[in-house]
Image (cartoon, rainbow, N blue to C red; front, side):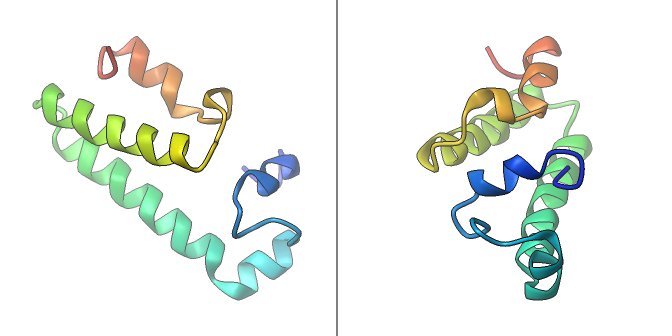
Length: 87
């Protein structure tokens, strides 16, 4: 994501002012990627429970809103709304 859209690095307060090589070396990017993938894994494993998936995604949204991430930067948002996970 950051290779194709480097401007998104500055959305993350802990990533601001850092380049990709520095993020890779620091482990910050890896830690965030692991959290993202864990959330994706949890949602996929619970696809039959749309209420639980909806709750998880709403929590992700609250966390991103708390960190002032604009909705249009969260790529998964449109897909979740499309599939009815976010109402």
